Length: 230
Image 1 (spheres, rainbow, N blue to C red):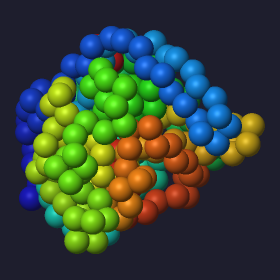
Image 2: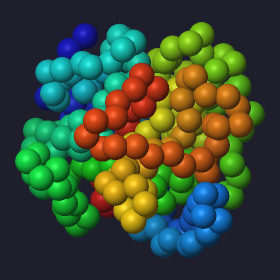
Image 3: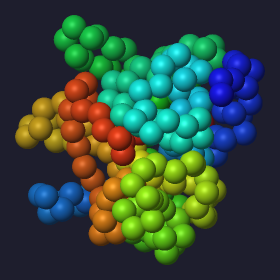
Image 4: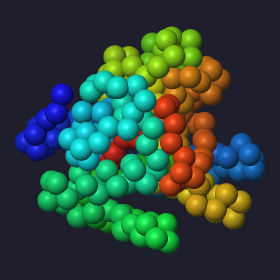
């Protein structure tokens, strides 16, 4: 099912949830380090980007599991940020990313009024909804993962949301974040968070961090959601 630009405006208006300012402690178990980040108030989409929305903005649907209300997946990080730019332009907002496909250099304008991927600090802060818990409920009640997913993605919004009204933050699909993981070790690899439909319970936590190549890596349990500055 395709939708119109007017529908996109309505979807964004209805589904963007304001997250309050705060602080979040992040950790990297690989290098045994922790750090604290200040979070400004921002808006985040209550669901992962669906195939309906992605198709309307890009006229493409790369997903392995097809269905309008399923999360879009099999998208690279560059696909996700390109979607953010296209959505911004379609709604008359400034693009957040400058993309040079020749050099594969992408520059973020963090002050732009358009749409972007969350930083991983924003993502985790939104997921934990002001707590320090690794999950916001019993996993089977809040997430699609290996035990209950029937080996594929599920329509967004069927499980219980967290206390801030966000659905599918854990499970269903991993979600790309803006951040480079560790440039000195992994170069341009970008972070993704949250766990997916084929992950064991132990991997589906608010604190789990993974990474891969921003231009070449895409898989059927990896999607994204969008944020916007307040």
